[in-house]
Length: 478
Image 1 (cartoon, rainbow, N blue to C red):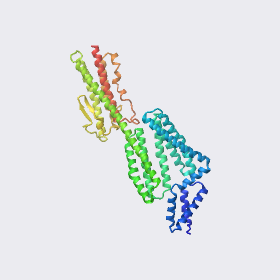
Image 2: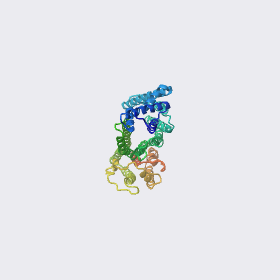
Image 3: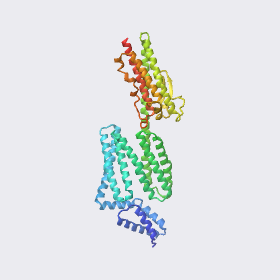
Image 4: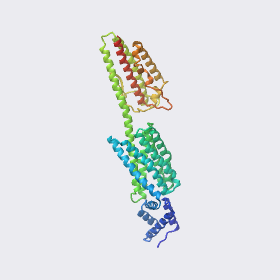
């Protein structure tokens, strides 16, 4: 009967030790059992390499770990208790979250309670018990940081998502800490663990690229949650790296090494899809909701402007044969001059946003001339969320802001000279720029073009409201 060399036995021993078999007596028995199986296959004329591969295929990749888990379950009461707790809490938490999602969609009562209970069960029962079970099974001090970082990241992510859905305070902060923990602690620890046990240089490269793609993906979600710039770029780079580089490359390597499709490979495929695709859809959904809210608000302000503009013009026409007609016409002229100042600032902001840094472009399709004046075509803006236009034209101290403040002061002084003070006091604040353009710190506060345009649209409607009120006050006074 063929016998294994010391080198063959050493190879088998090393590979079994890599499986993190922590029971020394169990490890020795498994080594002896596998060596006997390999020698039996070699008796049929196979080489050591072929015989060892055949034995490993018969056992499966998880069989040794399964044997240890079953042994621990039989002899260690604490392990058995934590294993049962882990399984029960995982099932209970998942079921509660599933029902919470259903209740939330159907707008049934109790969704918030189920969501909170499910999340806290997973975060404070399942995660600690899972960490204890992992430690019991491995006793690997080298992977302790990996387990702890995974535990902290997952727990913070669960709590952060729950807080975000429930509109609790500090939700964004918790999610930010979870994302940073994942990027700078969990992913590097996982990568180091994978690289240490891997001899294939191609797989090492794949693991590194996978870690980069995953980090970019998490960073994209963080930027999206915090409304920071670069979210779309990061998620595009992350998805491209994971699905168009890492996944095909890993498939090619695995296809060469394995004769059959392993459960591990299927898990990687399903896990990648489960992680990335919902995140991409969530990102797109959040972006649509985020953009749509601005467009909806802008459309409502434009509709209000058209209504007030037409109403004021109708009032002037109805008083055309009265003594106050010249005064109303003069007020309307002053109002239109002030609106032109604001229209000019809006055009400058859009021109800068649509062009390259420091090179504004000519406005064509972005602003449409109507009978009520220029109307911004918000859906035609290429970069509606740039920060530079607000900083350069509406930030306190800029030339445009100074010009606007002076024009509003002149208009306010003009109306206050025509209308009794007690009447003017009722809408004087409508002409105060600080109500529409509060002070911002250019070093820390980033205000987008859309936000700035929305502020100006509100100001224009405030001006038309002040004009309307002044018409009524002058007509009654006369």
